[in-house]
Length: 226
Image (cartoon, rainbow, N blue to C red; front, side, top):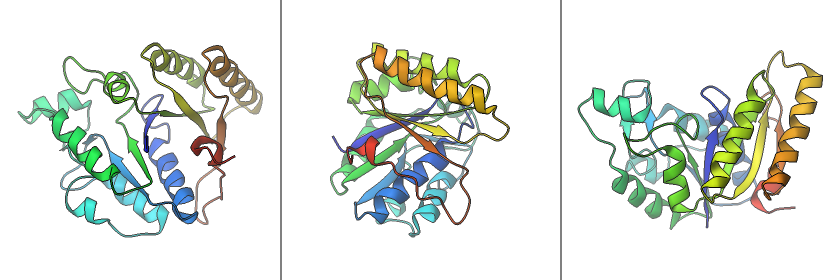
């Protein structure tokens, strides 16, 4: 399986930055890597998140970008996909999304498939994001941070994924401005404890403040490069 599903514990947790940094890491080590947006809301024409990924990787747009395969569903209203689609009198074409991801994955070593928001975000009236990812058996990379309240959301997300049979490739622990160092340290400890409890790899990669020049974060453990 070369497709990793990347989800955050909430909106604005730093998922797009984490995806860009992971893609940068893999690209700089010679891996053929591409990022894909499961569904993009709040955009018109092309995904601004993908443009940010490409900039962080130091590359231009891929042919798959120009063909619309890396952002197979774009809605202009910034909301949950099910609502953004309904507001435009459209539907979320899950078959088209599945086909796009499969086509892209055939040409790359690693595909980082970025979800919208958290695992419980509805893609349609009847399907949650986590159900889509679990159905495809994608390994999960969960993005969290040290901000207050994150531990609750992180543990719930781990449990939600595990109960659906998903395997975690690892957790990315984002830098958070103003986070209490003692709380952050204990949150990291507790996340590792709950990964162990649910028999998941105890892999947590800390991502510091991301600004140019970009930090050289080692994401090797997440991708089996120990």
